[in-house]
Image: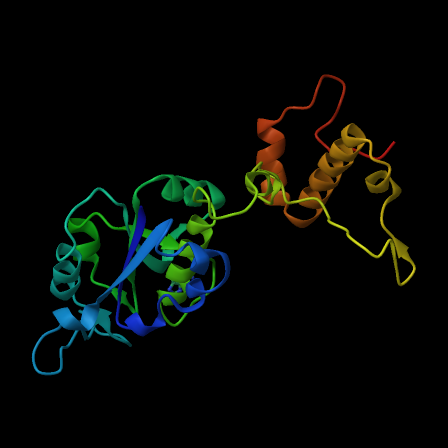
Length: 242
Ligand code: ADE
């Protein structure tokens, strides 16, 4: 079973929202979650886990020895060990897919100014960020990573096709969706979606996905266009409607 172990100062934050909905229904069947309270490995009567930064400066840093003891309390089983930090490599759907396809993850939630660099090196921790903004700790980032991985596990999501056509899975943002009513405040559902011609619908959706990606995410569009060279005679622009 896919297993997530979360090392945290706030074990009561888990499973949190992952106890609900899709992930919650699959918890215990398709995946397992355990927490390792970092405080249990702290020093002295106050179970201290952090100290002032060497060289001075604001904030506190998680101690290398405390973090090492918490990590070493988990028997080595080949799971990647991630530390959540705004300094980390940005998480993307490719990394999510590979984490989800493996045995699980060990997630170390940083707090304070960070984690002593030496334990990151000695325990081969991979630093991962969920975006270019600063959270007050890694716990919410850990929840985000687990949610993204768990929904891809076998049997968690109803229809596997929905995971294939959605945003990022093919390097493009998802095409726009419509449902009833057919007319909403003067806006009609595009006629092509109502005619039942599945080839035309697929072509329309591809065109929309390309257009929206080029418009909203030029960065994604550039890498998509580079890996999908257009047929001779066509330029690397999103396809236009006829
Ligand atoms: N901890 C604080 N900010 C973070 C971020 N952006 N990503 C991952 N962990 C974090």
